[in-house]
Image 1 (tube, rainbow, N blue to C red):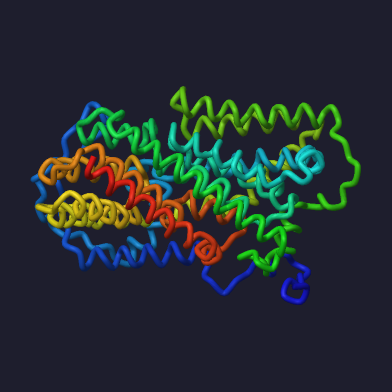
Image 2: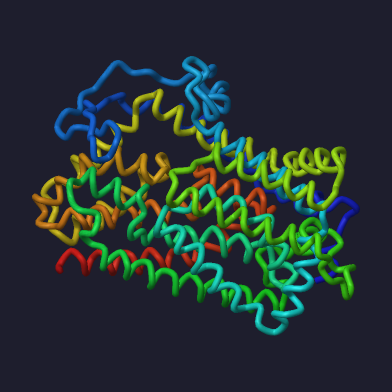
Length: 481
């Protein structure tokens, strides 16, 4: 394997693949969706305010075609900017997520400057020697709990740069680290139980209590987590035994250089008192973030402020000095600048579709397709329709508000519970968002982990197939209960 992995002087050269970058893929998708606005008829449903959901929702039976607004060259060029904010009204789109990513990068840059993370990794690996594999199910369970309770998604971007060095140091690869976070939180969202951004909003839009169908969703959560943890553990064991079997084997040395940053040269280093305090503040920052998001209604601006403030506190305690503190913060933000740009590009796809007014037309086609189907066919066609719509509307809350007011009432005619429609929707959305190139969390996480999109597909496609069969069996059984 040494010839295959021969490292160049620049680790970034070793990370290069012939597959297009995330930026190219997303821009090509912007062009594709813009082309569809010239082909798919424009149409809209009437909207009415739903107080329980807290926003306007589509009114069933009110679809009508409208004057088309095909997206041209100028719209395509504006799409990356419009992904961050509306250039006409200045209303924010994904600018808050992008700024959060930059503040997060600055925070990690300051933390790395203290040396506490490198030393802590060595200490942790020494204590876990021989039992590292059990980090995988434990961490995936924690991320899944975040996904099923409050829809943990963008928040996971904070964990990649921390966890991947630990995983690589344990003898696994970067894909294992990405999978623990992305698949862990993703299976939690797929099996959402009390997630306010998926289950609760969708149930309210379907006009049912969100507790209806919770048992079936719990089955999806637990069963899906077991499947995913077993899959990732099996892959990790195989890679540790033979690194050439890694889907990123060609980048093995480059990943170690980038993520361990001299960690292999540390020998018998113990944490200093200052480093221990820095690590405590580091951990408490994430605890506060989770508390704020789950119970205080925090979102990106407040999370960014939290990481900014924590970076200052850590820099002062570590006595970095003004120049090193600011320099480390800027360097850390620079490292994640590419991720911030990816976030805007991904959102730009949705902007093109909304401006071209084709989303409601796609939804109307789904409404027509489902009419008159028997129970089993209805729920499975519903699942696949939601899979298709999830590629264009990756937001769980956005898809719920768009589709549930129209599709949920159709369940009454098919003799299927509306709660099962909600379950099919969130399962489809959660499944697609494990690979969705229009979902900033996917392309952002892969960018931080230096894993190309094609390599991620090679790793995850068997798991997607297994999960699809599992979900189909569960919702099909649910149709007859």
